[in-house]
Amino acid sequence: SQKIEQNSEALNIQEGKTATLTCNYTNYSPAYLQWYRQDPGRGPVFLLLIRENEKEKRKERLKVTFDTTLKQSLFHITASQPADSATYLCALAGMDSSYKLIFGSGTRLLVRP
Amino acid sequence: GAVVSQHPSRVICKSGTSVKIECRSLDFQATTMFWYRQFPKKSLMLMATSNEGSKATYEQGVEKDKFLINHASLTLSTLTVTSAHPEDSSFYICSARLHDSYNSPLHFGNGTRLTVT
Image 1 (cartoon, rainbow over the protein chains, first blue to last red):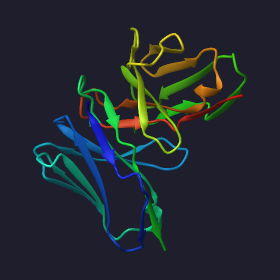
Image 2: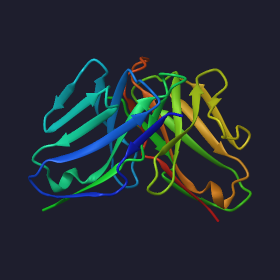
Image 3: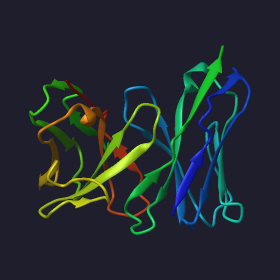
Image 4: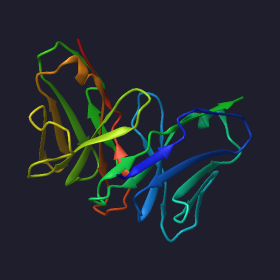
């Protein structure tokens, strides 16, 4: 069955460093992958989308890579700030319908001042 | 643009009662809305796809008679948790797409924290 895996352990880094989060998937070949940010008690907020034919996508301090051979996406936040502390979720279209998004369990990022 | 409003944000109800959660797209029309459920420190679990003017499509394992979905207009979908039990306590979040395109990102409401006592 389709599986999306994100590191369940929190990532704790110093302000100013680059945070790198990982999203691995199995038994699927998605046409695109999305990343969302979720703060406690709130709904997720869309950050970036990357298509299967794109190796890398950037938006301000964010960078996403997509390796369809490794079945992996990396999400980077450069020059991290305490305000970047949140849970980051990756999402793929469902196998039976591209309209449905299936989410990974998310990785919590803590940026220390 | 693309604001999704969800109400109420928190609700506490007694076991056996029903609770209705509203999801509105404030500045766009949504023919399709998605309802997710999230347990603490867990991922969002897709419950059902709400289709305007037709029946909702439920994911495997989700009881359609337990979680009633109505999508009567292009800006409103409702989820009713019927005969709620403590195990229904969870965080329910709705979402919609600004554009009816498969890769258009989802815009989420801020969720409803349901506690069943």
